Length: 327
Ligand code: BTN
Image (cartoon, rainbow, N blue to C red; front, side):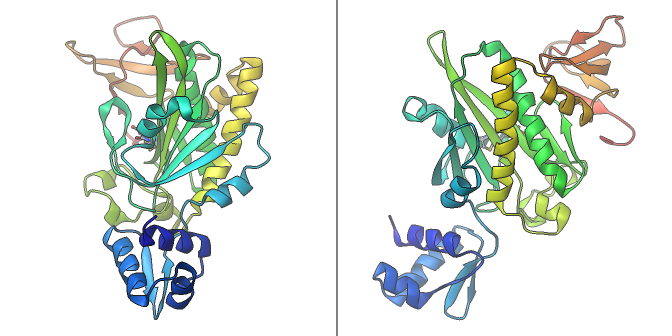
């Protein structure tokens, strides 16, 4: 490990306290100059670090394996944590190492450099200020149920964000806080030939981002928990709360195959139900529809204006028309 990794771990461990140059140099047997250089490396990489006299501290709490273990030790799923300093994408890491990762592994990173969003979009995460995690699971289910797991995850995530404001779900995978996108879900599956091996549930949460961390254009539509509450959130408590709710819905669903407990949350918190939408499909003219339901398979049921029947939405490319935004 390099010295700046050691300093980062010490700062995470010490939060909210600082790490003095004397204590650090003694523990890691380095000079004060080495310590300063390690600090500069972290600051140059944009970690949320701050200096006060001869000590350094983190402006916001960061993901800590020890805290997560302690906060989730009583759950049914045997979650274990792999915290990487930086990876292109936690989902890609989980898929690439799928066969060697334990059931219930949760991959986390302080710095996701090439995060993936749905429909091939990018997902950007500010260093140390956002949550990027991927859960590795191999349930014996039909891969056709995967859309249902997106809804299960959305229900758990939405409930976790409720304590920070008006959390809602924009089917299938966006979580809005006070009308702005604050978290997203990307589920990917692992196959060997035709054989379904398991899935990776990717979750990104804008936890402690500031407005400067967003592109100007994105600020109209996206936000963070810190921006909405004007308070710093502990990512470990947030992740543990989400995993607790996820564990509850997931274990119950595996046992009963009843999706209603989480689908009813998705319906209650949906910003799309009853709304007019415009559906775009490749090589076809766009069509207007009204959203009628989210069914027990997690599908969005719509009625096109030129049809009398209610059908599942075929295209995932749609926009919402509503006079009051999502409300
Ligand atoms: C979306 O809203 O389009 C989905 C965003 C999902 C982002 C998360 S961050 C952790 C995991 N790793 C990725 O590369 N993507 C997901």
